[in-house]
Image (cartoon, rainbow over all chains, first blue to last red; front, side, top):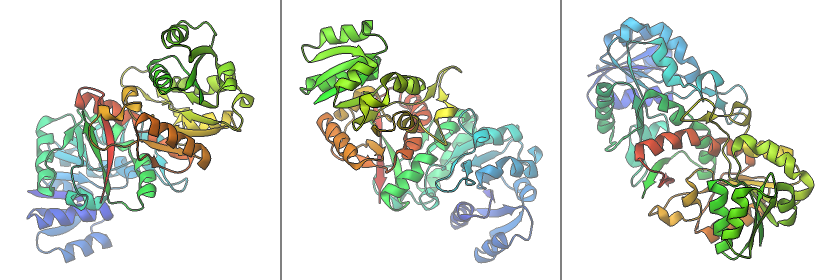
Length: 217
Length: 217
């Protein structure tokens, strides 16, 4: 499978590296083709790892992962363009955090509560099949759920059932056996809204190696 | 212990009834002294159960529980007044839900993200010792954690350590053995922010008998 991973931060780096280790071809996307972090990542990860501009890697890929800062999601979607992702499964792992007021961050009002980063992404790329997932945990747990012992949960939501099945398959490759489908993409308002809680829980736990389990009767 | 439970809805009813069953004296507070639901509750719950106006029951009580609609929290706090709760442990179990746009509700912008219902309550009642807790689950689980099998979590936050210890003791009477202290009252932004997620999870589970467990490495 050919994956484009848009974003050169910790989350993008972790996802891209895991996908290469699983045997996929991966291109890391950035605003410029010579982005230093993307070039360094490609150089370190062998022949199946390359890098390029957002629109180029998205057009090349079978699946496109948005792993940029949530506040940049619309701008990056504009740079990608609807044509590059038409009909493709687009995986959104972002959170719309506003860091401008210091720590802990708040949610960006224009991308939360009555909407979400996931929905804003879908609106900008109407022919993409956007699925929101993996945005509720530390990046290392995303690709290695066994870092946290026992049962704990990953969530997904989106409008297209086939795209969700693509994501379920990718999550299974990462080690997630039973993802919780929260329904339509608007459920991203819920999962993105977990982040302010997560940040306080991080303080209470003392490290990021924790995750949510929904315990049922 | 003398508890005032402000609010006559399901949450107030459940908490007040449980507290009476534990042997406490409880007065259910409402805007008027002859509120039908409060009178009916008092009539049904024996000599230790009475009802009255918000300010009267709060002034009488040792501990005051806010179980009103989150959108009314400032108005009810105004009706109570700072003097009635000065120096007392005030327990806030509300969520600032905006039902005006249909279901699922969103969060009231003026009471979320950069603030919280808990913080608004504290600002209105500066001499109260506000502790936020129990607002992350169905009301039946609040007073009966064994409804959901195995380990799952209740959270609390607030500025006053002695008040938190009062709340930990009350939670222990309800059956909660290991509450998670999230620190200052501003952490209520996190726990109140769980509600949009909870509402989607309710749909996915199919009933309200579930709760969060924070699984740690």
